[in-house]
Length: 189
Image 1 (cartoon, rainbow, N blue to C red):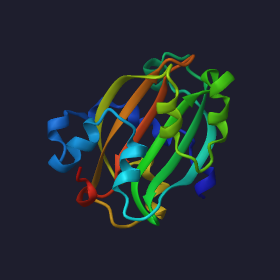
Image 2: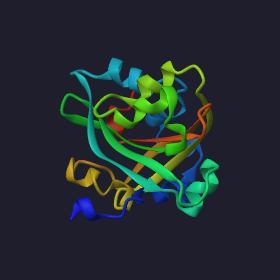
Image 3: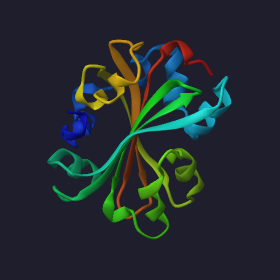
Image 4: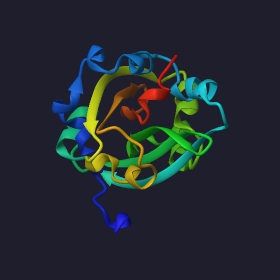
């Protein structure tokens, strides 16, 4: 049953075997993957319909050894795990998975616990303390556990998805936001 699946379906994000160079990505996606601004804003201007966020999953989880090393946490520290689809009307364009350490979700960051169907991107780029610390380009097979909830939302996907995992510094612990592009054909500037 979907609700009973392991909470750390995001473990793939910390495996180096899926990390690649920007130049290896399909050319139309390279501009999207390398963009330093808010993906939410870029998608909003790209949409032919109404930009929307569809919440797929949100739960507290715990940092595995690899996640802890990557995010500067202790193994077992609590993480808010959130998965959403960024859509053009009903058409999913981007699958996003965020890992937000609980120790960072205090003070002005407290509202990140209850974003629901509001975009995280608007919040991140409005917060002056947050800075893009690192970006990794990833290509992951669509059959991976990371995309288990995505498979129930759309069936028109390539064999692998290209995306980026970005660590934002400036909070009490780094925030990891990963975005994967679902349709290569839409990826034009």
